[in-house]
Length: 163
Image (cartoon, rainbow, N blue to C red; front, side, top):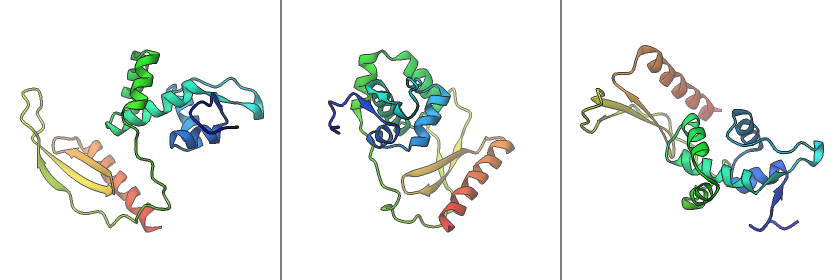
């Protein structure tokens, strides 16, 4: 089988590799409804062009920092041509986890003033760089539950870096 863009069907691992995600991510997106379920054929299950386009569009929207719920709404809103244009608009950089440098210990948060907005009561943010290219932002007005969640995310990242 050819691995060029003229290809119309992929096995799970091939699709995941072509889109720059893991097979587990593909399965999760199907479960969440971000991707349509492939026609089930047991070991011969294949994914089509629509799956690849949607995966690439999801990656673009994630690069714009949209959460999965917002991505799902956006995917439903877009027609096939718009979806394809989105998928081709900003190809996300795919990096290998083995070639990425080890992230340094988590630094203290940086205070950043929020832009003036009449509809926003947030006055400042705390920002942590969790890993190269990954930041966590927490509004000073966040409730205790959200603050605890942010601290837990930071702890999980730090634990994974220490392994």
